[in-house]
Image (cartoon, rainbow, N blue to C red):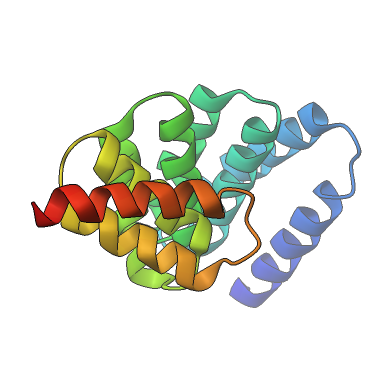
Length: 169
């Protein structure tokens, strides 16, 4: 029965999240994932979330390369999973793979128009990579519209002012 499978998978997923040790969580999630992936595609809905959860755990352990592997697996199973896109974009940024970071963040922005952190990061990337001043201005402006209490607000305002001055000349 399909519904029993999903209920039991959900219950296991919930139970795994109660384990205190992240490495033990990862191992438990991997076992669950191994059970799901060979039975795809209908079970991809569950498998992509489990792969995403493993990515988050690796990210929290500062193991970004491994996090990327699982975010990418999540996206192979569900190409438009927004949380995996954001995790992938942030992880690529930390790994200094800026073009890949920007690509993932752009896809994420299609789904979530109100995530200030992502607009800030994407705007900074457009500026750092010298790809598009208008895009950098647009995204950094959107960040300021959405986020008034971020510790970077003043730095972003200064950068935005510099970008606008150099863009108009």
